[in-house]
Length: 130
Image 1 (spheres, rainbow, N blue to C red):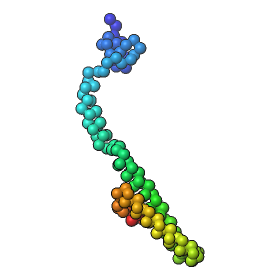
Image 2 (cartoon, one colour; image 1 turned 60 degrees about the horizontal axis):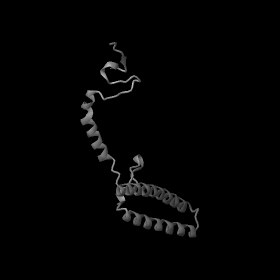
Image 3 (tube, rainbow, N blue to C red; image 1 turned 120 degrees about the vertical axis):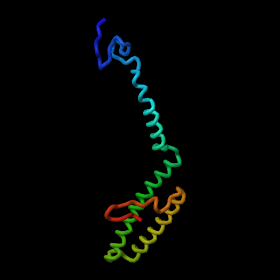
């Protein structure tokens, strides 16, 4: 019987058929069984896909982005107020709008059980968001 090698496996050992398809696993693959179980356990711990944590995580992300935008808009409004480019009515409306936004943010944070620190971002040399 002639022995031919295909991809490191011999035809006469029963592992390859005539079309070079693997028919059975190599006995050394059992060595990886414990490693696969360990990786599966680690992935299950890291990927926590329950509905409540996903909703809370998404709410935290969205509220953090809103907080960043609110901070930027508030700083811009203060610059415009200091520069005198806004009328008294515009200043009043801006103040009212920022107060309403802050109240709504607090309501949403309470609904998703988030604290101020949960929305904090480290902005590097600029400091933290809150």
